Length: 125
Image (cartoon, rainbow, N blue to C red; front, side, top):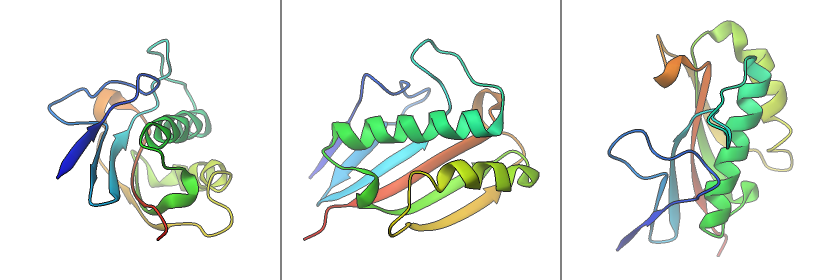
């Protein structure tokens, strides 16, 4: 059985999807955009990455998970030249055992943001 997860602290989905879905102890978190509580989007890649990871954290928390439970992320950048700047902020959230990760450059992202990150989290047995 699957359960939709919705956090009032993270941006609402901008399409027909949930912020996350929990199924058999595995949490699948949809790509989060760098939108803050005031519906504003920060300007720099570092600021956007920080907001994206905060939003991921809100969704994880709503489901009873944390950053340490994340086993896989996918990072989307509108420009691979921003990889280093994104990576510096990302590293602050995943230190001890960082999750597996893919980072890809895409032509455009929703709302013309610079970064989007999705993840999969699993509770330890």
